[in-house]
Length: 496
Image (cartoon, rainbow, N blue to C red; front, side, top):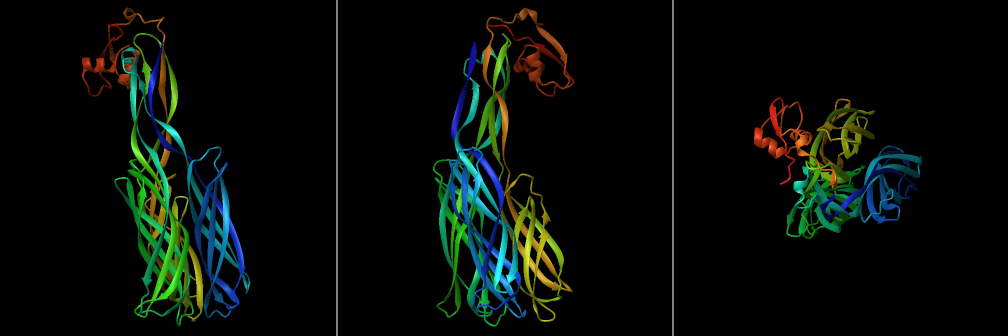
């Protein structure tokens, strides 16, 4: 006789792909005629923009654009000038046979290497990471238990497992248009040379069927300023607030990421006669929303009435941790070739090398001899550890202070890392039971009561071995610690 189990399921998004691949983008171009000959490159600043993503038969095709801003020291080392080069690129990520229904993509810059090919030609090689996450629509088991009325025929070891199901995959494209007045107590700004934008999503809240996401856009812009023979850097920040429609699904735990798709800067005259930076930022907000559920099933089963055979099934249990922030810091004295008299500009960035954060600093400074010099340094940051396998959702510099000290530059840095643990575990559970009705047990063949000293056995193991039940054992012996005790195990095999 077969005892089928009732299966309760729901439709969810199952993560079938999470892959990070490295790619290299090479570009080169000529120096504009209005520029002087290049002596050497002080530094190069790169923006990586997500331009497109498309699910294909084999996986996901991701398109982007690399924008490189070269800061070049002229041949006579008396000024810094800028050259901007751009290149579009495309990469394909193999989904390894999974037929994706939805996918998300993220592009991150790891490192760059720039060269002067000749005084009128520059090149740059950038190493990027492309991280894609893909989902398929599938059925997730919530409960796998015997039908009501079958409990008297078998004893089951019930287990409950907490899991988090991905129920919402959505995204929203949006634009920000902001104007920032420039300080009037500084050198007059003549034009915008270039800039970078990073999006940091900090919190979300639910109101009805809508999810309100908040964060900030951090903007670094380089200007040409009157009377300055080097670029002037200024930092701006503006809040982000976007509303996503998530329907009636509970989205208590979310994974959020924002990707910049295009950026435009312009310099305008303000009403009061000063200058204003007009920034237009286009981006896409990508969301994976999850809800908590409990999986109920049997891990094992036996019968006191007759032999049985179990059919087993493997159930996937997805788990997702909360978004967690860790801090990392560094304090270091940087050695430089020319003694530093004055720091002109700092262009910082931060990235992850595995689970270890590191900062990369491009520093323009004036030497004690009066020449403009540049140095690039990579500095490891140490602090609260990020678990192996955790997914980095965001990393940003929260503090960057550099100052001349002796023959070097004292550097103090702090970074904030937002990460999340996402995993899938598999549990083997009972999915059906077959009872051998033609071979029933003879209750008289087993002792009515057995006295046993417990040595690390569980009540389940004792009940199964001596044809009893857990509730019958606790009814005779009481509850509490059993290890080392003498227990009476009553037989529970008679049919009524």
